[in-house]
Image (tube, rainbow, N blue to C red):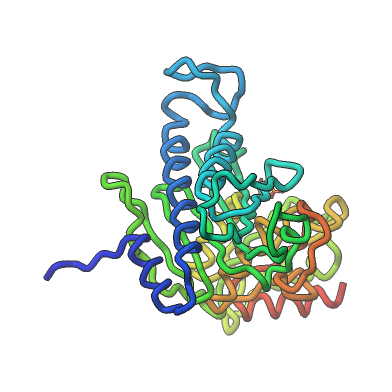
Length: 337
Ligand code: P6P
């Protein structure tokens, strides 16, 4: 029997055909992001070989000045978004301000209507140890009617995301995205350079036995967090405790494992990080859209992440994300402060 395989492109087009008013722009934009991530994957996987491990000033085999991988990833994504002609601005973890695109690249008859937030290479400090790292992206429609994009276009709550996704560069390169109709995962087949559908309509288990948190911060947590983590370590067969601790220290790797097997990831506020460490717009919001589409939950301990109205591009937020029942229990402990 011929095994049916679906490329990312075919899947995006099939999804687009389910939406009568779709113009195809979002499909093109998602495909452009996938293209950029294929290029980034090549460099990430070569980093160990030609020693572009993250230092500036070195020369690579072409004698070109070598950039840090995250700077390189940022340049690839920015360039592809700029010439793709569907984004009117991008907001990157690597750039202080948003970057509006002049209109010479826009396709004549189509209003360039999207804003893209991205963390080009999250966890890049782990690349030297060959630990999985990732690209995270989040897509909004512009709110301004025409002309250059505005800051208001870039500061919308996560509820207004039209699509979100990540690419994890690990033992294989996997792209996971949602456009509001379920979560789907694709594995890159490097021999043909195609992302092939490997996980259709992903759902995160409602309850898990795994927690992910940097326990080195224990002394800085408030009592609510301390009590929750101690609760997970108690012996109670009925509630599968003690939980297993799994923490890679690379958000996309920790999130992807928990999405597949169930788990709760926490990066709460602490004495040092009053608003937590992770960024709202290009880490918490996209992963929150994905986890909610997969039946999970994501909050800052008080409200859904996607309901937070942003005031700054790089603002941070406490993040509890993963299996719904685990996040709800954690919120109860955090309410106790
Ligand atoms: P810590 C990586 O630097 C990162 O931004 C996320 O990918 C990861 O989840 C977090 O920071 C790890 O932070 O403080 O535990 O090293």
